[in-house]
Image (cartoon, rainbow over all chains, first blue to last red; front, side, top):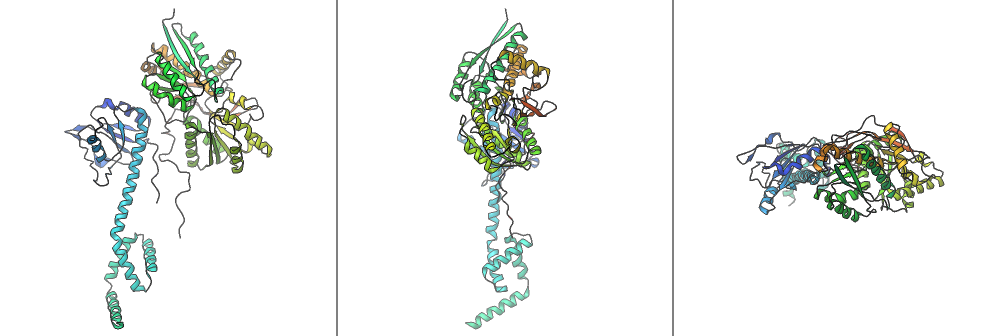
Length: 220
Length: 385
């Protein structure tokens, strides 16, 4: 599997900067402009940043969140993966563990100290966005592993069934199932699931099973 | 009696491994200081010249001394490592460094005015030219520091994206002149051309060794394996010496052979002022431009306060020896005119490619590089049965 490629040119990006005091981030906006990234400042209404999450695009948007604000961003990522919708870069004023923890919980993958110094911005974007991409990729792989783990039972059952049906050994049964799953453009687990269910409705299966169990009984 | 007097620092390593270029830079700057006396009657600008001798620690110390003495503007630095060394001092004291050399980009300090070329003005035009006219296989050789590393990365990505290939990258310490192994490796690899980011004495030794090795094997080096650089200038051609001087390609915004009235005036004034050399170069012109812009901005602003001068400099448009030059307000880098030259036996360059107008600086290559980093390794895809 290929590792995600590094993003290094941020031209065309949009920064959503959730901050109470804009004077601390003047250098941020100036440097973002040099990098081809526009800055927008979502309004904070009743301790809540007004961001339309449906329109957020991880290919374009970057969220900068001031860790000193007690503002809900409502992007509360999944508790386990802490994967936000778009890359999050924390703006750090008070360096207290509680504040930093909030930013970690929001899924921040890079930090900028307030007042923001221009020379730190490219590094923060580079780390923040690429760590987000790496984490997204890792999350995708984990989900795939979970799916495979759940499908493991079907695979084992399908191998056993095919061994019985076709009189082949387990390696051959596995190879056939894998080949057929590729041919029908399904992953192995889904294909085995389908194979078992379509096989279950074949009446001959029961007959066959009855015969074989009868034969086995005979031999005893 | 003049009403305003400003002291301006001038910091070049006029001794040490890259002193030839630095001395031509100092000359370019001094020429502009002399002209500024004639330009304005009520403002005088006094250059305070220091020499760090190519020692990184001295750069930081001297910057500290200059700024502590009340100087707010310093024209100086040639290598990127020295610039990176002094920037913290300029930011701390809110002084302004006028950096007059081409460099690898990916920087835009608010305390630096960059009058030399950005990567979109030197390496990218060179890549297009080499791929279209010479061939797709390059061998990179450079001095072991940030200029060569980063310039080679930009070069490799641009080459790979356009179907070219980098066969190998070799680095030597600044000042290292024992480069026979690198020359042998190049002759083994037989690239279409060499991309050179060696600086100073290492570069001169390389050009001589490489030409000699090719000659010994009956290879016409300039035709068969040309060397392309973004640094090579006229005083350096003189250092290389007559046996190996011709047929090298250089991507630069200035060549002393440019045919226009401003350059004629510049080169004749320069030679009259500094008959012992080194001759004019892109870095000398860039230093000249830096001091010209600085003195005009000082007069225009009426003060040497950094914010006012920074604002004033973006209003200047200079008829420079290379053509019109002005400073981009967003990045504080210069609009410059890229060219490619081929060196002659007389240690000058024939201009073979020239942009029709000044090109906007793009220090972070936001307009001119791919979104994702390009990998030059073989892709992780195999044919499976």
